[in-house]
Length: 161
Image 1 (tube, rainbow, N blue to C red):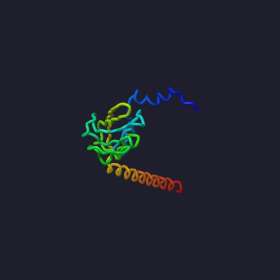
Image 2 (cartoon, rainbow, N blue to C red):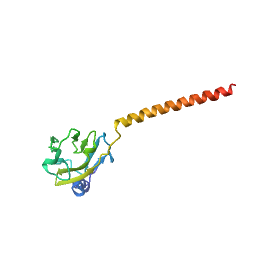
Image 3 (cartoon, helix red, strand yellow):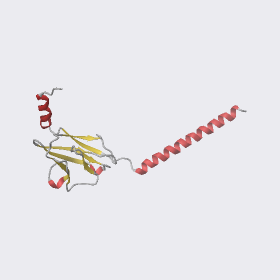
Image 4 (spheres, rainbow, N blue to C red):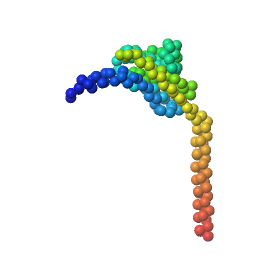
């Protein structure tokens, strides 16, 4: 298989031409679910990659980072639900509404790049409402079944007379 010089050039320089991007998975995160802030258009040979809470890269806002050897470094804003993948993506387990806000990634590769994204975690239903819905559904099915049996017996009884 022949690889053209142009394809090697594009593969090497496209991240720096396009700039880094952040994709949020799922697009509309709900409280309690895992959220991934996926960094795209970065070179695999980055020198460092750091995540910050907020729209700037002040060291006192750093959550977590990786160096070129893919060694993890916690910042002062690290929280128990935060983790980082070796590709630089930020994982937030059991997301909460207070995780909402701006997140900035800083990547040093051939050049220094920053990108900020706004994360909005919406509140899910409280556990007691979910339990209430389940119990109501079970009771509803039971009542409808009982009504069906009652009507069947009542209707069957009239035909036999």
